[in-house]
Length: 247
Image (cartoon, rainbow, N blue to C red; front, side, top):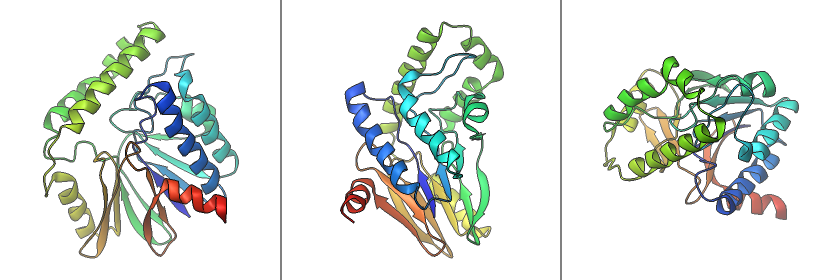
């Protein structure tokens, strides 16, 4: 099985509320570990991420540990950076054995062609974001940020991420927007599935000979994606865990 998650945004809410969402995530990762071949994380697993040479955000310890457990079981993990968790350096790669991917990827699962992307920069309304992205991810900007004390740096990263979320939540994507049109072009190029996040809206739409899938977010009704080689499903996390417990 291939599983997909996106836009969990751990660290966004006050810790008590955040832990409830994290508990759902950890339970989900436990369950899928039974039959998961590959876990695809399509960005914004964390609402913010910035690491220093010897420091990472400690509030994500439980999730980091669980991902390491999955790797130890031989599960492949593909982690595409989102627009909130772009501050990765080498911790995931060197300590967990999980490669952090900085761009869209093309791959094949069970003979089907997949185009995978977080989705940022694809909307018609992302022109300002695309400009800021070049500044924020510039090596010089990231280097200067490392000169801040970790407590201050992580606090600033968290604060700026929350402001970004407020901006995103006010966007009017409209009935037809860039992400769907982008997916349609990729399907015309021969991809069977285009899977993205970022939009914070569940979408499973057939376009010509392929499908555009958006995984939604974990703020409202968390879902995961699952592909068994035959069909792609969007599964409600709470039902998924309940059914597993009662089987």
